[in-house]
Amino acid sequence: LPTISATEYESVHTNRKSIVIHGDALRTRNMDNITLFDLLFTKEYNRTPSDQIVFAEASDPNNHITYGQLQDQVLRCAFGLKRMFNIQHGDVV
Image (tube, rainbow, N blue to C red; front, side, top):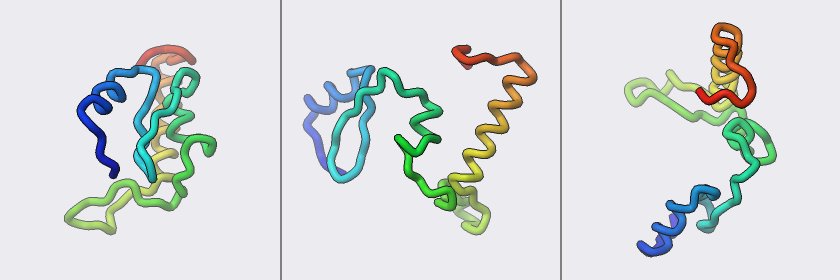
């Protein structure tokens, strides 16, 4: 990961309209109109392959979850919240 100065760190982490993205270079991205769902689950912002392992137990790496399985579980949870508690678009959870 690239290194940044304390001044750069402070300016990046106090700007609430940006997110830090680590990759080939450190950069910020305007986040005004991006939802968390879009950031995590749409191909425009996230190109993680569905078979990519995102969690594995340290004691048993064969017990793992892939990005596709995580996405399925998140959507099932969201559906359950909507159905059981009448959560609607725009509600804060």
